Length: 291
Length: 313
Image (cartoon, rainbow over all chains, first blue to last red; front, side, top):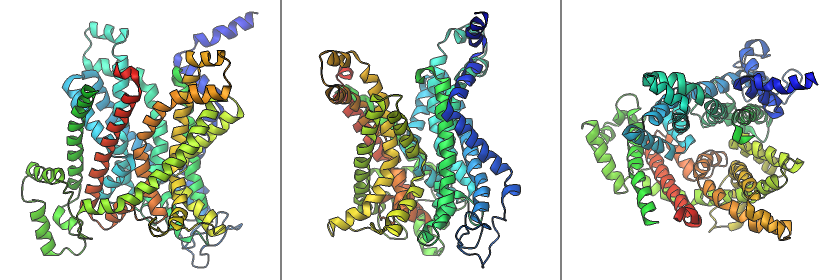
């Protein structure tokens, strides 16, 4: 009886963050997603030790060889080991996902908070600019930016980051507008706290959860966007390995070397699915309306 | 209705103004003298001089913007330096192909997304629900250019049922046209089906708990009638409106799909322009896309307003 009481009392003693973590752990899909993300992160960090061959080393005697014990994912049109290129390609994809979303967060959150907190004409102007950016479809804006900036992985990340920014502006603004009418924000104002302190100490910590969920889902979208730009020749430039550029080459050899297309595509699918599962799980764990 | 329309138009005008600044600003991202870069690899002095005059590059930036905007407002999106044709003419030439692809994709998306969403909501927390959710996650996580390549491998290379690429006009040969368009349309519809499925599921879950559905059941109506006539009819309104907003996904997807299947549409136009360094075409296509997107949003809003009596007050 005492144990049962202790068990029921237990969760109430936990902080909201710990309760959310417990809910996240109970979500099988989210945990599978987390494990797959961790796997790919490990792969990207340990690429020099895990890749069996140099991803750039060509071999004229091993052009478009089907999978064998020596090359378990086969080789490409220049005799390079597909497995090694898939492993090294993880770096470009994850880097693009994380850097682009960091750019979007660092631009979008302050602008969104400013709009939501100040309201009035500042909000009006910022929202019209955001609407203008949202009017151009995400990938088309990224393609246009990457085209004008010049094709490279760095420019692709900047282009994707800028294209993803308006979503964070909208989200941060909506959250600030909901939070700033709460009693604790009113109390902080009544105590004479400066606006910047109220925004950073009292509002920001309370809007982190939805931003975290959106960031996780945005990483998935950014990885697909980087792969798309590289597929179109606007991202990572050859011979550096990237899943998107590998697929671009592979489509020309689909009839006689299908393995060249299979593995990089599966890698994109797996990592994007993992981030989507994790994002869905985080949303369910952090947002009571979705439970 | 009229007041709402005027209100919406009032927000669209400043948005379009900022869109024009954003797109005009793209040209400023070019490193160095735009005339030299826009002139391409040949760097013909005559072309450079022509561009300098045409784009008013010797004028201050705000003056150049006013000239450019004046042209856009009169339907002049510039001229392709490679193909020597007005950009608007090029867009209108390619648009029917993309409209056909997009329409077929929407039909496929509706045919998969809405039934999957209904089943998922009605059979909540059963194997059907899980299966529908897996299909949605698959749709959201599969890069469509990879799906396109895999379908070519299966249906063109292995089975030899469908052509791997190319485009035949429907006026020329409807059968060949459909055979060439069905795979790209499926690829494009796949991601939108996932979004529609999620919207339908959540709208159906809300509607199926409403009082009027309980009343319909209490009257002794067959469950199929309750779901289709009382549930779906009410759930579809937000789904269709939200679906209209997927226009952006459709166009972004079309860029990649047309590239994979070598379809000479709107998406291929922008990519070819990027690689030919035909920047005025890129700029024109983006401007056209944004304006169409804003117009479609307005239509979707109006449609929602018209079909939802509560908004009309």
